[in-house]
Length: 339
Image (cartoon, rainbow, N blue to C red; front, top):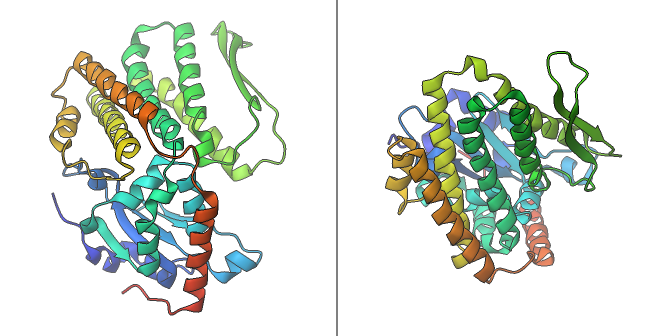
């Protein structure tokens, strides 16, 4: 594995870290994420950089808003502290894992980032049963659907698409502003199109909802439909690699979720299961063997869900005190500039 160190901050493609007004000296935490963070990277794996920045005073007290910064060219996402804490409280796996990366993968961390990382258990609750479970289910659906969809007629494929979207919707509340149950209803009914008898239709009744969040929700649903519509143009070899990656992440999510429920610890790098996960990614297991593994780890996850001593909900008052403390210490103290 090629080591990526703090030298990443000096690369030309990452100059935005220093120049963007919302980043620079406001950044409190930067870490490698994705396959490198999990320990499942291969030679051509992307470098995923994730981080946290403290919002400027204009964002806190003024009219300007800031939730996160994204640079698609380098696959970098840096969250505003408030947005990060909000997602962590919901048990979002992609957020919680950032607080459990290996020390050697931390690109930058000051005392404010360290305080957040040391208090990571404050964000853990039984909510992870649903968030990790739903994320794992989404991966399983992708795997099952991809294996079955070539063999089913159009009407059956519509059912698979609908099931996939409905399962995806179960964890929208972890990523987006919640909307009332039943506000977005999807169902299969007669189509007005001549070439098909039935298709997925939708009814939407929602008021005063974030346009940006709705755009992201629609994008997720649209991407699922798009994946199915590409079936006639599939690259079998490339598609196989994606399926195996889905299977690997499915197992990883169940293992990590089980560990959190049992030990209240977040360990993103899966050292003990490294060989197993890489063997899955390399295709050393048949799909029948993979589904048996899923059954085993899903059983462990459900058993841990029943026996966990995590609180039903996180102590939001305690988290709020931490958040206020970080803001007060930051703006009343001396900031350390990233070099």
